[in-house]
Image (spheres, rainbow, N blue to C red):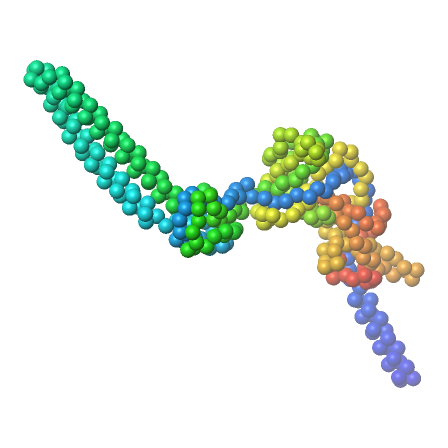
Length: 345
């Protein structure tokens, strides 16, 4: 009898502990309401400032920025050996100085001849000769100045500078290699000037004005927004698609990343709506826990996979094996497993 009493006590303790293990949760009912449905279109994140910089003259590359380096606007990215150009420029500047000196001398001589001619001390022929020599000297000086400016421009082109701030995304050449004018050197991308590009049918694009916000993400995970700021002037002749460009509200994207854009269609439809907190994200995907009662009167949960269609901070429209009026767990679902017993608030 003593053992029977002890066994009964242990069973009662185990049952009480099992009952205490039931998770207390809050719940809400699945509602049905009229929502504007969306269609998902493939888009891509792109940079508005993305260029390939090329050599503007031939020569040996003396230095080049490393892959992944962050460059400021106006900062040098690469340099071409310019020693020969520097010598040519120095020679041209010396010729310019010589031409200007001769021009100054002949200007003074012309002024002297003009004064003498006023006193009839020199002939008209001598005066005209002085004017001709001065004009030739002035033209020689201007020609020398143009040559010096040309060489200076070439020398400036030996230094390849960033037109905007960005990151070196690719190097096509290495320091020490010889290149010709027009050869690609590096690709520069501004990762802070991003947009999202998507092509949509012309009938849907007609109802999307600049400034309208669209949901962005992956299909079933539209938790960010972007606003339309540009569109193509015409639809593609073959596909009849119009390109839209959207400005994301966050910078947590990388150029080239694929995204989904939720574009609203014209007619609203009835959809099933649950609180946003009812959707649980796990490695198996998104799901809600539907509350069910068995024949014994016990309350447990059933995991129901869902796809989030669209929504806001408070509630989301979902697709899955749910019916209007079903009860789903709102608070406490993060610790639940399929068929767990729960207590309802």
